[in-house]
Image (cartoon, rainbow, N blue to C red; front, side, top):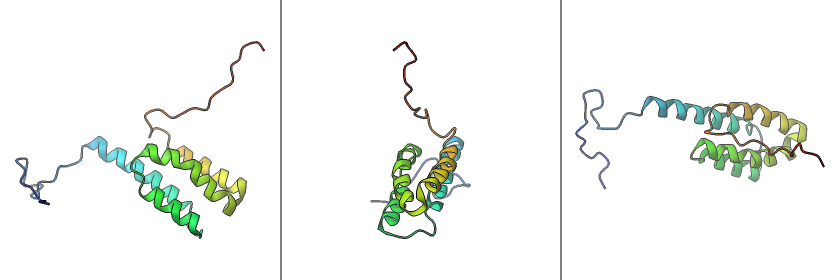
Length: 116
């Protein structure tokens, strides 16, 4: 396997032939990393095997959707350590960071408003 295969698009600005990220990919990745860092920061100072496992899952989440769905597991990890109120406060702050990051944010199901 060749690590640096020749590329006809080589330019003086990028002599190693790497593809430059598109501007939208850079913005999307910045948002992903901002959310990831905030989620990891919520575990800072906490110890235990569940904290270590959650930290690894957050670090290796591949996209913003994966981080979105890890919120429930993060809440379960934080509740015994911070209490229900503390964990809920952290999750409320983290959830705000997802605004505008997801293609469509899942909304909670609402009860029908018809006659009973």
